[in-house]
Amino acid sequence: MEKPTSRLNILTEKEVGPALASKWLIDVLTRTYGHHNLMASIVQTEQDIRSGRLCPFFKLEEGKLACACALIKSEKTIEIGRAANLPGKKGGGHLMQDAISTWDENIEETRPLVAEIRMAGPFEEIAGGQGSQATLLSKVGMIPHAFLPAFHHPGPHGPDRQELFCFTSSEKLARPVTQIAPKSIFLPDLPGINLELLKNFLEINKYDTVINLVNPDRATLTIGLKRIASKPFNLFVVDPEGRAISPDSFIEGKSSPFDLVVVNSFSNDLPKIATDLIASGFIISGISSPHEGSLQLLFGRLRECILAPTLPISTFPFIETKLIMDLHRQFETKKL
Image 1 (cartoon, rainbow, N blue to C red):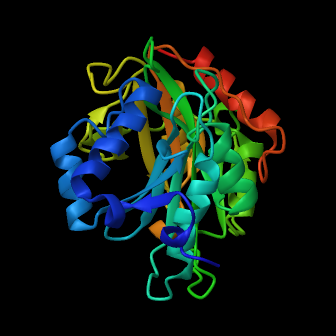
Image 2 (image 1 turned 30 degrees about the vertical axis):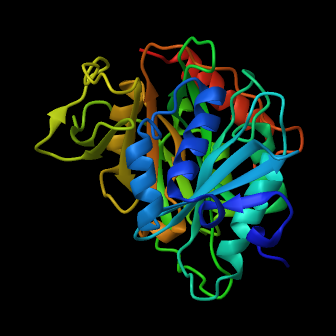
């Protein structure tokens, strides 16, 4: 397989330089999304490119910029993202495949590949929407582990909308990850458990954990939560000394209308924690990826906002489309 930099009309920062690369990347994202929360500063973007943290890829049509994407490198993962086509252009999916090939072919690179795939439709058909769903799931084979309405974009003409994203990952075959999870877990028999979706996530991520349903008991425990991050959304962990939850708790967070609680699957209080979270508007919408260590359950909650329509590709792999749309309706109807 040829390297992306040798392919016709595909350029990286090596060909265009960090300054122009940062301008191009922000221009594509801004013209597509209206405002991209992670790409607001050309100066910071240029610094990230120079440091090697951000590795952008560009495709030209008739000598003009058509689409872009990037590999974002962190200590433990490589993310494929920042993907979009300029209005009226296409090719972002193929460009993402070229970028991914540089990760796949680098035998010294052992970090897993991760992606947050935009599930919303329309504003427009973009590489961050159905194009990336087909590329990253059907063609590259990344494995979903969560669906979260975690990010928001206004589109080129507004209004600002919260959007469902599919969180996925892929491991190098030469470095398989050992799953760390209990043999069985106990959860309350409530709709917010999303039993079939949760079973799906466990199976496709190769967990053999068995789910046992028990009667919910609202009188046994009132849990506390500790906020550990507020950007790009509110992130909480269970903490006995944290703030006790209620249906309207934590709504003062202004950075995002989305709240996420991460719960350890090994917790002896898991049924009680899940019962309290569901009573406070949370639902199970995913699990942690295997490379992140011990299995965690992800409980999401959406506060009042515009939730963009969700549009999975017709051949969405691994997860039934009905389960995705059921989850979308849960988030839509349970907004605080």
